[in-house]
Image 1: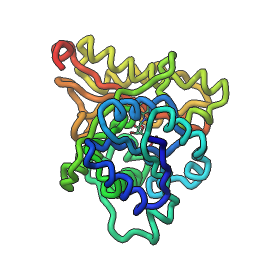
Image 2: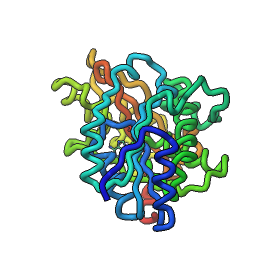
Image 3: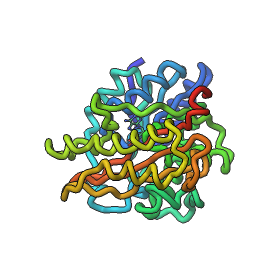
Image 4: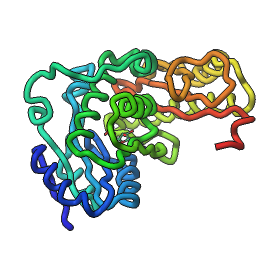
Length: 289
Ligand code: AMP
């Protein structure tokens, strides 16, 4: 079946409803500017579900900086072509006033899980994410929704939101897709100049340095983080916003590492903010799942 693009909620709902009797509906929410990371989520949905829906919506509610929203890339034709190539059935690409016909009075608030990492530096970001994800899940009503581990705090908050709000959907997570030098693929990487692009893998190297120390038996989080942060050179183009170790479910900072933890960081490279994270397992956990 040829891909159909919907920009209205009723049309998308009718298309999905017609396909529901055939089997599971898979859903991949995105902000567009699709790349190999998104493609990995879409390919997994295609393998696992009868019908695949991709949403493309740059959600104003989750942007804490107006200039970031303004310069976010929106190559819709290329995105639709990529979706077509991956056998997507429906693209949902609403305009902002379709999703927010008026300033919403009822939104999803997020508790302590949004207090650290990106949540500490991007006020309101995760409330905006949780609100749009719940709205999209109510619009599409998928059986499975796919999210990337690249945005680990987002993934954990989405899992918690659907549990707390009883949204009937399975959340599936997909491993981070990286460039050969380790840089996590992101729509924001296209803003990097060539010198900045050379510096960008430093963030991955720093979270890898934390992961390696945890695997080798370091239990003092502050020590592991300080050593890893020291791998980022003094350079006027670089600013490490945070590098932290948190519990994978609660996203609260960890002092003593006795169980698997997430190392997460945000690095400004010029005017581009990059994030990355890795699950870190102490040696005695590495043989377990
Ligand atoms: P975004 O368009 O940035 O909102 O991302 C849409 C989805 O794709 C989110 O679930 C992201 O976590 C996921 N994603 C983005 N980049 C990657 C990547 N490099 N590898 C895996 N998933 C990713």
